[in-house]
Each structure stands twice: as structure tokens, then as C-alpha cells.
Amino acid sequence: MHMVKLCVGVASVEELESYRDERAHWWDADYGEDVHVHRTRMMPKRGAEMEGVSSIYWVMSGTVCCRQRILRLAPYTDAEGKDYCDIIMAPDIVRTVPYPKRPFQGWRYLRVEDAPPDMEAGGNDNSAEIAAELARMGLI
Image 1 (spheres, rainbow, N blue to C red):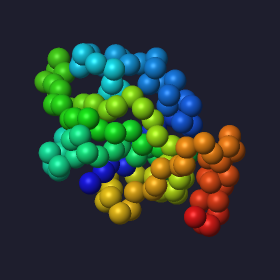
Image 2 (spheres, rainbow, N blue to C red; image 1 turned 90 degrees about the vertical axis):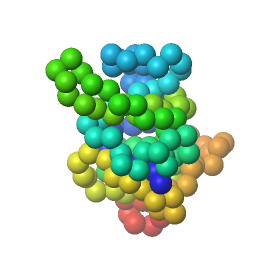
Image 3 (cartoon, one colour; image 1 turned 30 degrees about the vertical axis):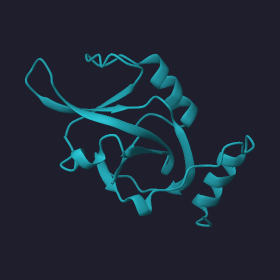
Image 4 (spheres, rainbow, N blue to C red; image 1 turned 180 degrees about the vertical axis):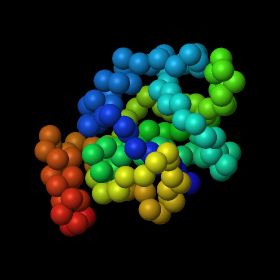
């Protein structure tokens, strides 16, 4: 079981990489390692089966275009007593074959068999752009 989430305010994989690098410790939580943390409101009920084996698939501009491996999920409570879930991910961002995805709120589970495959390593610079256009046209 994977997770799919809108990457709000981020338009490209390069922008997500920049965000990851600039805000590695933006949240008031230090997990003591080279990780990328995303804070969300709800703890997944199926979190135990996701930790260490699943990925979060990021939707940007209406397209799933990359993923990050979920290392673990950690509860977090802010100073006002509000509970959150920190999704602690590997810093590596893996491009996927672009797959169109309509907007939604929060995050959704994504079955393994429905997850888009990774882009092949060594593709030329236009591979992701061409694949995204083909996906928008409904050809992949």
C-alpha cells in the first residue's frame, strides 16, 4: 500500500528537490538523519503496513510525477495540543512515468498495482516532459 498526495505550491520535481534541500529541518522536529519530512493532519490507519516498504507519490499540476520512499510515520503534537503525522521520507526523489490525477484533499491510499512505474534511468532530458504530455493526451 502506498500513499498519493498533492504537492501543493510545487510545480516540478526540480522545485520539490529545492524545497527538500532548503527546508530539511523546517518543522520543529529533528529525526537525526538525512530525511525529508512532510507534516500532515491525519495519521494513516494502515500506517504499520506502509512504514519502510511504501512510497508517497507526489501529484504536481494534475500529474503523478515522482515518489519518495516512506521510512516511518511519527505522531507529532504542536504547542497548542493539535495532533499531526510526520511522514519521514528518504531524501531521494524518484521520477515516475507521469500519470494524470484529479485534485483531491488530503492524501489517498494507492494500491501497489495502481502505482505508476519508475522512469528508466538514463532517459534523455526530454523524457519526463514527453511522457507528461502523452499522459495528458491519455496515451499512456
